Image (cartoon, rainbow, N blue to C red; front, side, top):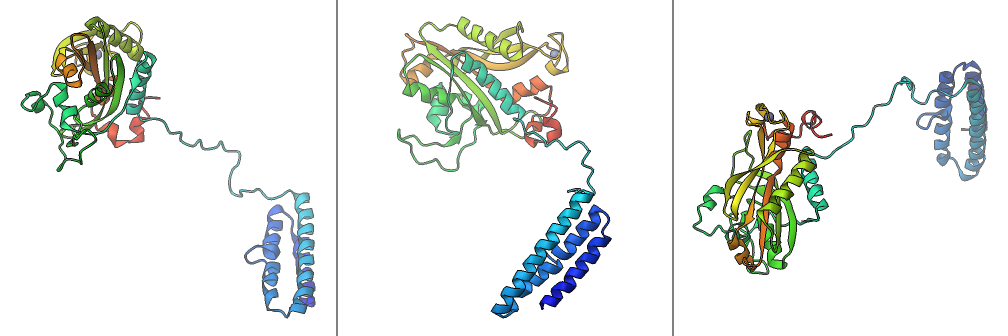
Length: 348
Ligand SMILES: [Zn+2]
């Protein structure tokens, strides 16, 4: 390569530039001479390394000067015709595509609404282990080994218990409810108690339209002197009105749980029909929302509270069941398949 090669190149460039009419033509000239990959000048610069040092300096300076000339003249012409559209072939007047915004899962939204309502009433939110020991899951909740209630709970046991914790207990099962957290909290704190314990729980159930082996619960517990069934009823009414809307009708229906006495289920007037009866409420006018009751004295004895001094109430909401009724969904599995077409129809 020599300086005369450069003047040939300059002549070619002048010729090409003089024929360029449009922004696209100018871009082609730019690519041909200054293109980063296969531009003529770029190719020359790459061969500099093979020249003897003296020559390299002279030719290098000449090539760079030429490059600056090319740049300047191209810039001048480009300014005259307007630079090429940055995205050729793209209609930049089209409205943009809005990126999809994520949102919380409907089950999470239901859980958070419940948490917000009780936090607003001064409840503490506590969480705990999903691997639980027999004491916290059954024994302390008035379900001793021979208690028939254990048959009601088809429990998922670990193949081998975990190593013992500080108190010497060994986790041996996946918790069947978050009620174990009530026990854990009462063992560590004196009354008054006002808490909710949200979390995942496990049962040995099929995975079908109305059952899942894993679901979410929010349990609540209040313990103090002189807590009565009236306090329970009032608290749940406040909850129902905040969750479903002011003035919603509720009723307590007698039920049975080993850890509460008396026990009840809270029904709320069906939102689908206003209580007149519809498929959502199976034509009863009511939807079942939660189980509750006054804490059984045996539970207080298990944690060392004096049942003569203290009373309390407890309740437990199944988030999936509530969401089914709330959204009128008839297959619980849809909450876990995470099909966006389904999820987007539910909570905003
Ligand atoms: Zn209804």
